Image (cartoon, rainbow, N blue to C red; front, side, top):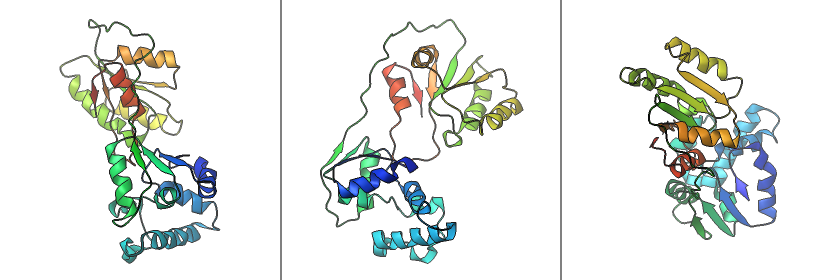
Length: 248
């Protein structure tokens, strides 16, 4: 079973409780999953908050931040270490994670007296792109950011950095990955406001072949993230596989 903060995993959760197996965590902080799971089964947002509060007390007992229940913010779930992984782990025959941070968060979330099933940390495999290309050194530098374009990846901070870089080099910034329609106008306006309209590009979703071409065209990659749920970045793995320097 694979699990992350997605409504698509609601039925996965129910099957995993009935038929125990190996659980592979994409995210380790699963409050988003739990909230949507409760939301789908409660009558109103208020009932969802009350349900979440009762679940926190059931799962965490004396570790729960009773003084602020049920008025938790998203930041509170991180601050108080509420990952909501216990029920997944409790019934699992084994658990898979992809990095040391995820392993540490998972162990902490179970509590100090918990008994874990076998826990395996398996990093992503780094597979070189299919058609290595010669790096071009005689062209203006390109800073690339790979993967889904989202505010959590701090695109405005990258634009601010580009303004500084362009004082000494004619660099451009390209975002290689899907961009939701709701975010595109905002990001394009931020580029224009900084005078970067001609130096910032959003490719949108690209083919595998075009993705590889950008890996070899880029001078370096900048993969920022404002917060984490314990994920491992496939985009960073792609960059390392291609021998592309990464700022993160």
